[in-house]
Length: 213
Image (cartoon, rainbow, N blue to C red; front, side, top):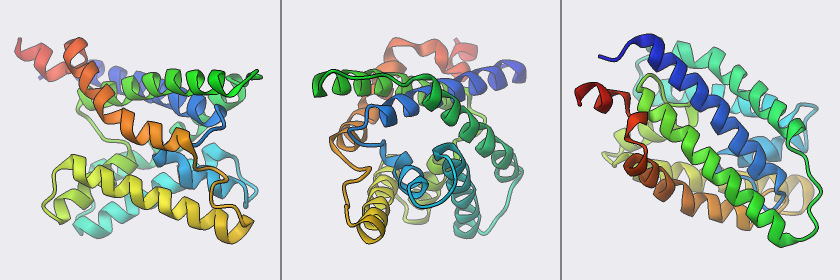
């Protein structure tokens, strides 16, 4: 097995990269990524930052995982502090990566750049093979409960999260598309294929595979 220090380092770098990509997608202002829709929507109605809302949503995902699996584990406990670290990172990059865009084309390009970075972060986290981030852990738990592959569980989770975000902003602000937009669709469609591309082009991110080779 690969040295745990390498795994932890890869995981933490993946978290930073992923948070950067999420912040870029949000700051493009053409639609939050599916996994971030609820946090962005909630931040419009409560006195909390997007990162703080994201951390609370991650805690919700962890608790829901435990309810589904009916088996709390050490991994669930480890995800709790990481949820707040991830929320802090999102807020940091949201403040850092603020730009004035001269047109919609620039917003789309910025979102696409964010999507590339977001997908790379996810791939690094998966390759570290320690923990999934809580929303992806919940997606896996949903898939397991219904005997679905991870990809189908992830799709179900993304659709549900987006629908909840739409309902929140529709009911509370009268605008269902306050945080959901074309960027949400682009992220939903593009994340999986990009992770597949990174898997082929950057096999060193898979620490198990590297060790076996």
